[in-house]
Image 1 (cartoon, rainbow, N blue to C red):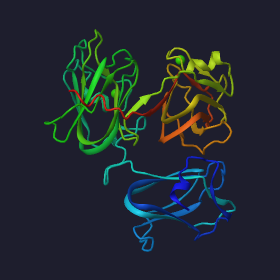
Image 2 (cartoon, protein in one colour):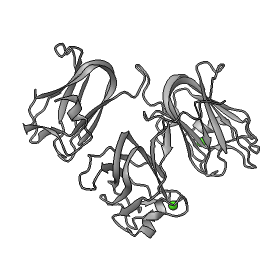
Image 3 (cartoon, helix red, strand yellow):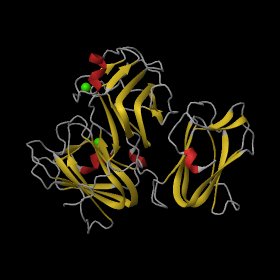
Length: 408
Ligand SMILES: [Ca+2]
Ligand SMILES: [Ca+2]
């Protein structure tokens, strides 16, 4: 299988074993030269069931000496993302270790390098953190009001907050000490119920020693509600967020997270001529509420979540994207209990889910390696007595513009 043919981004062409899966069957890829990578993606495309059931992954520099498997696992979906650890090699071999009644097909295979070699995995998952799990972080601030102290940003409780206790004048700061150096590309400030207490504008700095900070690695304007500040991937121990705007509101944060999504700095796509449809209440006057920029208008399924409900976007043209945010706004309990994201160039042939997971709160963030698609389908896969409602749907793409790092 040649590397070029397998990465043509066309999910309708595929390699197939042409026989039911047997242990010992293998697929080898020659990258042409030594490459650094840490993640393998295999996608069965429209041949849904033809994913590898049990498999091992080997790497080699000469195509002859393979050593021990760098990964052993079992596939459970048509879209497999495999963490290999930091590797540098020219050849890759995938070997089946289990039989199956299905063929083995791969529509697309990709390698990616997300982390710095030897870096840590995500330091903290948003929404899933428990105080006892926090790995020795501390946060300090330029000021606090009474009992609303900085540690409230890390206590896992959305109802406790830190606040600056004074109108925003510019120059207020938060400093996070992660204990040791970590790799991250997103800092999330959740104001909880204090939705107007967001930083009017901000700059983000990182440091190894909390002494030398260099230029800002990101800057931007705040927005009401939760603020995700995305950065080019950083490896550092200290993070400083400086509020640079002015407002008669205080600056308050109920929960703070530092996350490594592996997709770097992001830019939100503007819903120009997008058309959005849905499995229920599909009229554009209803679905359009997901894209109108108003947190107080929403689309809702109008029925208990049963699994199989969907919404579909037509972006009008092929568009690179790597992150989707579903925000249920004030319908806090109406989040999808489970979700899968599918992409297509023609609304007929769909990728296997590029992202899937469980919803755990009113804001669901789905990330995946950058892909180009015109159509996006999100399927609700859970069951719950609540309806499925979305106030705002955001699509994001990699932002390679370097503005924000030039000035301090
Ligand atoms: Ca809190
Ligand atoms: Ca809305």
